[in-house]
Structure formats: C-alpha cells, structure tokens
Image (cartoon, rainbow, N blue to C red):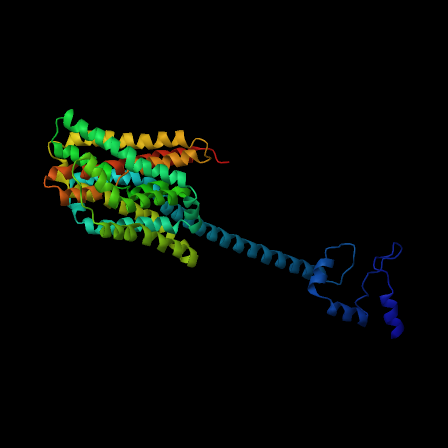
Length: 419
C-alpha cells in the first residue's frame, strides 16, 4: 500500500507527451475515487475548463453548471449592488440640492427686501405687528448667524487691523456728519423744506453704524465680517458721547442719550449673540453644522421684517407732501456716503492685498447708519413729528441700496474664474 501511494504522488504534474494517461488516477481505482471525493468544487470547476484532460463521465457537465451558477450569482450581486449605489447616489444628490437651496437663500435678499417694501406700502398691516420691541431680538439673530459662521481667530485678525478700524470710525463720525450737514442744508435752502426735515437728515448722520452693515459684509466678504462688527461696535459704544455732541454742533440741540440703555443694547444685539454663535461653533460643531443650512432662509425672513416694519409703521409720514423730496435727498445722502467710503478706502489702502474686499466693507460701514436709533431720538426729544420722517425713510432706502450692492457684488464674484 505504501508503494502504491508513492507511485501516485511521484507522478509528474503535467502529462507526458508520450503518454495519454490522466493527471488523475482512473475511476476504477479506489484511490482515484478517494481523491475525487476529496477534491473541492472550486478545484473541480477550474480544472474542468481544460479539454485536454479526460474526466469521468458527467463530471465536466457538473463543473460547467457550477461555473454558470457561480457566474450568475455574481452578476446578480453586482446588479443589486449597482441598484443600491444608484439609490444612495440619488438620495445624496437630493440632500445636496436641498442644502444648496437653503445655503443660497442669501442671494435673494435684495429681491425679498424689494418685495417687503412693496408689500409694506400696499398693505401696511402685514408688518405693523413687528413693533420696535422685536427689532433688537431680530438683529441679535442676524448677529448670531454671523457668529455661528465665524471663529475667534477671525476676530483676533480683525483686532490686528487698527488702521482699518480707525478708518471706519472716521467714515462714521466725520465723513457722514459732513454729508448730513450738506444735504440737510440743501433740504432747507434749495428745496424750501421745513427746518425740522433738515434737522432729521442731520440727525441720521449723527448716529452710530447699523448692525445690518455687518450682515451685508458677511454676505459679500465673510472673512471681513468680524472687522465690520468691530467697527460698528466701536461706533455704537462711543455714540453715547459722540451723537449728543454732533447733534449739538449740527442741529443746535444737545440730545440727552441713555448711556446705560445704549450699552445694554450693544450687549443684547451684538456681543451676546455673537459670543453664543462662536461658543456653539467651538463646543458643539455637529449641532452647529446641522443648523447652519437653515440660518440663511431665516435670516432673509428676519431682514425682510426689519426693512418692511419701519416703513409700514411710519407710512403716513413717508406718504406726506414732503415724502418724495425727502426720498430724493436721502437717496443722494446715502449714495454719497457709499461712494465716499468705497473710494477713500481704495486711496488709503491701495497696497493692501484684500483692498477690494475692504472697500466693500467700508462702503457698507460708511453708507449705513442706525436710522432706527435716530428715529427713536427724534420721537423722544423733538416736539415736531417731521423730524422723524427722514430717519423712517432712511431705514428703507439704505437697506435697499445696501442689499442691491450685495446682489451686484456677489454676482460679480461668482462670475470670476476660479483658480
């Protein structure tokens, strides 16, 4: 028996040219039956592909069936896998499309602002419910959206640009008051409007920057949004001293300003919401990523309310006989401020790498004032109600102009070839 096994295992692995014997023992041998039973189906199906080797009757057919069944199963698994992949891909594309729509909601802000203006004029009750008490939380939400999309590093970088912050401050409390005095004087001397309307234009130029300028900067140049926030915060913090002084110099009446109330307003509208957004971004990034796509459409809605409400509430003053003249004067006033901020920044910072972005930021910062603060001061400290007409119109005009610039500049940036 030992010799028989030795003879079998000493056979060559390839058939001899002079012999037609198989690599396997014949089926009549007990040993061959043992070896055939011991072979795996995979080995048999592979070996059956060679037609030069003799096989026992029926074994080649079984092997071919095994190969066909294996191939059929493989193709079925591939088909099912492809279908699952396509379904997953469709779901992912739908998610991407939805996220793209939500994140792109900011691009329609100018259209929404224009629509809210028309709606406020046509049907004021649609916005009159949004009274002044809701305005601070609304602006706070916009600042929260900026904070969520920023980081502490961005604000540190902003602090390292004191020259830009100083330029923004000059634009707010030097250039803008001079333009306000010029257009206020024109209103009285050229258009023969009541003195109180000229005083209202001057009052608009004496207040601090508008928080909406921060949001406009965020929409066009997100990296410079912290710099815009620093400028607005500084002008708002010092407005408790500067605004009464400027109003006395330009109008001849020194307005008492609630220092405590203004500082509290800064904390509620600017500091606390931005700090909350930064903290959320740092401590809970997964939650922050989940809510980020929904912030743009909500911000668009809030912005529409902030623009339409003052217009609807002060509709009688705006539609007064002096309304069109005041609109034209304020249109020139804000246009001059936007242009001055843009051009002067280009002249002073022409060597800076991001000069174009800085020009846009300074344009918003100089062209937009806290007209609601001017409206509140006019209603509280002036007996003549006409003083409050220019601030009420200014809220709408500067918002339309600013977000119109947002649309133009954002479109131009999208058309630039990507590197």
